[in-house]
Image (cartoon, rainbow, N blue to C red; front, side, top):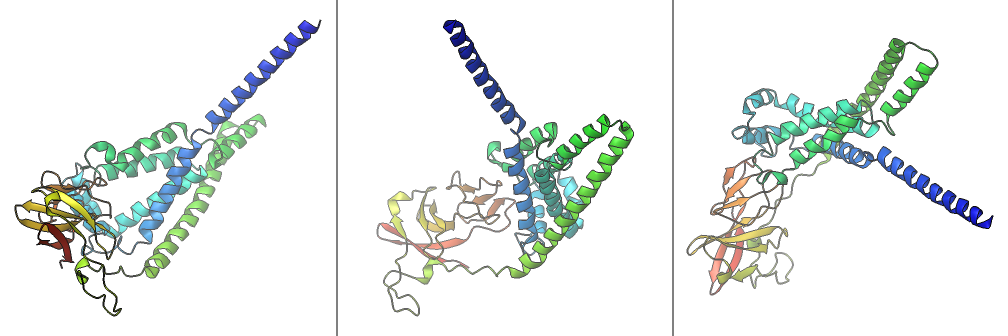
Length: 349
């Protein structure tokens, strides 16, 4: 009898563990899309508010960081350049449409309202950015927009059924059907309530975006003018302090062959600078910070410096833009040779 009881207990314990494991798997499957949904929603809301609060975004063609300048920079190399003419004809409207479109997609994704529509909007935004800003990134897997484009696919297929407005409306529609309401009435009620929620969320998004644009742009301080390392030289005195200034960065001349480079830091800003020798006996320094969006460019190779973020290329001898979307050259520094040392000098104007 005891053997039978023990056998039943063992079987019961095993069945209980199997049930709990099945419940955990079901829970994980049910909420598997939630981390991706939160990431994409938060990222798109942040990207929208960042654009709207950026004083450069809606500036004119004279600002290299503006929507106009960046669109002009990628127009020549984009496979959909014929579509960019309309955006350049109405740049402010186009720029605002992108920013508020990102805000709508982000809020819809976060709250799970019309999730498939929000995912479709996000995919279209990233598709357009891939075909313009990121098109020249090589190899392709360094381009972030194609990754975002594919990240929207699961949400486009599955929607946002859990912890969402869509899920609430779907469950309520099920209860309405159980009460005997007609299918037409159920669909009409769900559409009407979804529309009310969309208007409320859209209004909140417009208010948030407008406030970000108004107060964010007004509150932005003017960018400081970076002081070049040439403002201090070895053995000099820091202006107004009487204290010895930091010596200019130096590298061994042998470490910079023709076509090669060595990296130092601008002591004033901490930014990386490449000391290069494009031709025998000719030395200069080039900032390693891309003028498009501030990414770090790769060391010179085959006579060019490449930015892995959006594909900009710069001439390794002059810093001039070879390929956009960057529109401004890399800042250039003077380099002097002192025996077997190369000293980083002042930032050239």
